Picture 1: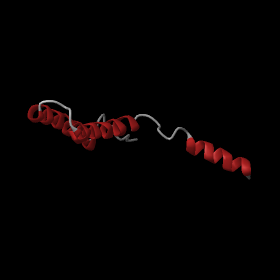
Picture 2: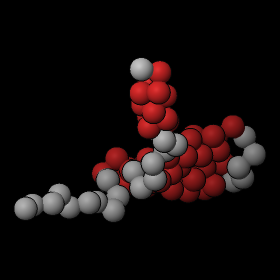
Picture 3: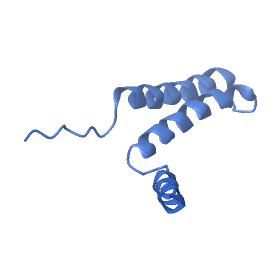
Picture 4: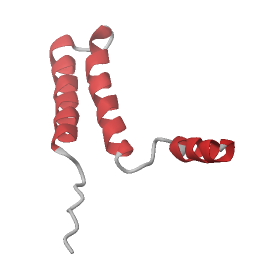
Length: 76
């Protein structure tokens, strides 16, 4: 039947990536160096992008759900 097309990158991930890029460019252009706390904002955006992008490709639950189900079935 019909299989949904798996997107390489979603709209929200694109917004996070592009916004972090433009924030870096803005900070470097108008502040000269990245020696203040302003570097935290683009870094946070980029980390959120990475978490979302990698999280869709990798099972980040570390099989905890399966272990809990196995433990519950052993207890019964």
